Length: 492
Image (cartoon, rainbow, N blue to C red):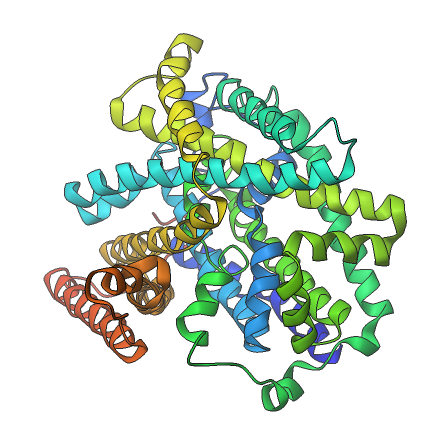
């Protein structure tokens, strides 16, 4: 448990050190009016208390990733703990904070508009369609797991279909109603359940500390199958929301419209991602501890799903009442991402169509087609939806990181804080798309009877990364009239 404790301390310390540094690089300005001060409409631009904005942001981005993703990702070995800690501090939280701040500075603009302003109209139009589809995909994916868990906890008459219908009906209300009417009232309750789960499991971890292997010892002892499941890129896509996730950047603009002062941006955007990283770290350690090690975890998941493991861990460690509250936290996480995913889809569509959202008739006009497409997607197999969501999610992170790098370079600020994550995630994502079964690997197998070899996929990933680095260097040469500098507190 010593190594786990060190990882936890480093993760939390990252918020107070690197998080402060990143906010200084950007130059947040408490005296500058936020979008809600200028565009309050009682629907999406609604000034909320900072603690509510934090909870909504945290629950929006949490989903199943920091729980199920961490459980699946830690099967790759102790490297998962390093990725959760350092990926969160240097990539995920930076990505979330800066995408949120760009929206704050651009009147609460949605992600495609932010990215398009930096990378051009062609990318903007691509991002509009891609982001909208991804939001609908998230809404569809995050119905199934909470429905399954609720069906396990309730009488047989309240089966999976009943809960799917109930959750989707809630999604529709959360998409249409003003943000303070339903989301603003329910999220504190959901937040309590999810935070109780995290704190309860953390305390239980220390009570069962003798079963937790030290991270450093397992680097020598852990045996994996690198040919079938290479850590790079597979682990970095499996653990998405627990380290970096493109989906988060679609949620930040929603809270940018409710933030009353820029000085609260770091705890809301950077802090929410660090909190999610803590949840991922806890569940990765809990999965290893409860099953008796990495081999035990692989054996358990070979006979059951992550949902069953979460249920067993919660009930075994926290008792019946505590277990129910903990599982409710796990249920709340995907529901509170699915509802705001569809709400984000409405905002993205409204932004590029130029349709104001104050009137309910306008919101219905935008939302009804979104609900229809989401319902159709829900008819597809869940496993296929989740696999495609995973790499689409990271593609979105790549676009966002490159847009952030261009923005910082144009403002003559320290762009390396986003350039390094952009390069790394480009290599990860392109390699994954070429190698993974749900990428080009399956396509070439069907067409030519052979999958793309890992070495060729890796070469493609590194090649695309190098190409983008060359293009970025060219962009820098064309914009090298001023030196990079750390801004003053009130700088743009």
